[in-house]
Image (tube, rainbow, N blue to C red; front, side, top):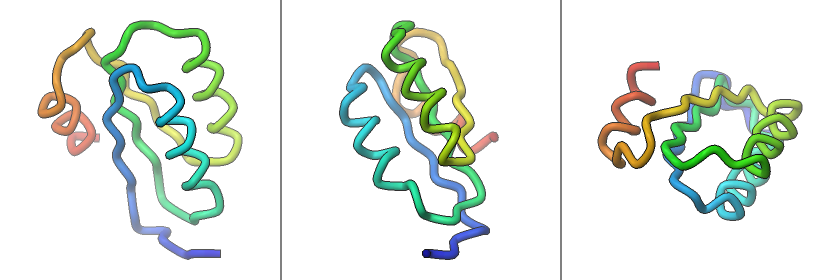
Length: 81
């Protein structure tokens, strides 16, 4: 098991639920401090289910952003958290 207890991983997403699923699954097993997802896509029941499921395996924090607020805005929100 990898020990990255001082590392926070930040992800910005807009749509692309399947790519997000693959990315989050690849992080399972890493001992990270936190995984922050900044999401400015539309509300999506499939994505909400993914967040709920993955929060059982990862220290997951989801930041919901205004729709299509942009990559820079999302990255800045991640850094602020």
